[in-house]
Length: 244
Image 1 (tube, rainbow, N blue to C red):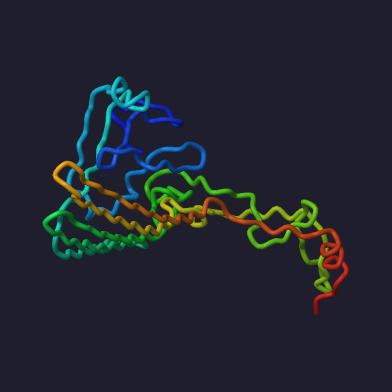
Image 2: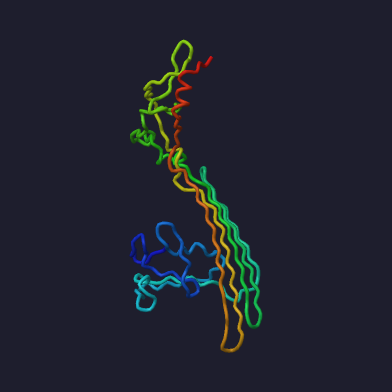
């Protein structure tokens, strides 16, 4: 959520966000804040910023100021836009459409936008890998790991000669383990935005208008590598089975 003067904590940014003069629908999990990204970009005409405290007029959530997103009105025509971006192991795509029709006493406007951003793995950038020796730094990788073992009851599962029979043993291998490639610097994101605005003059003194906003956003991010846990009965079966 946008902030003015850097004021506000995580529970409130002290900046009132409006769309066409009325309040945003709030969203969030830990805290409810107004997200201006729900508006389709092509529907915007201008952004008005009041960088002074306006709590006496708008309420306590406008201590830092007010941001008003004004959409297009009485637009007629059809407009398309598309953008493609790409980098090393990373790409983005966005597209949008705007359509409008107006008549003597009113107008209707429709806008839709879609954006798709791929994830960016930490292993795809040299500065986020654990081993920085190529840049003159140190190797921060873990040297006490067993990346290819199954661990029942906290012990590594090894194989003993001569029958290759599985046995439980503490086998801490000295590998150079860099798991940075299993986490993401940027999450994968897909977004759909939909906006409709209608206004109609009923008389010289009476006009009705309405805005419909819909937004759907999906994020997916790898935050840590997984593990395998073997149940007690399966671990006992593995210890007694002979692999030929």
